[in-house]
Length: 144
Image 1: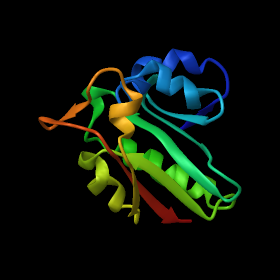
Image 2: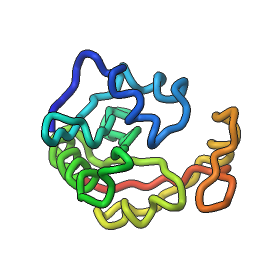
Image 3: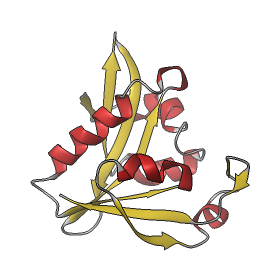
């Protein structure tokens, strides 16, 4: 896992796997800390996290290359981030879609709220997941 301080734009295609809006990604790209998991010289997974208040941090983006999914790369990145942020934060937050809730619950994240109409108000095109149009973002948190 490498921390990327410069040239974050080069990872935009991978970031778009988790967030289909380049405009939304740009809102957290510069302020967040980017970590890339490399295998055989290739970026196969990426995460952006950062502070969200005085004692909270947030995972803004977590993506794996489509041909590399189900290899444990996202799991490895989440575990890395939990260890990394534990000394700095009391809890980590993540906003996600219903399909990803079980993934985060494996790490001890618990549902803590909803950002009503987040997807419908922040994305120009509808976001469809498992045949359903997403409107609300599910919020989860985990004590560190």
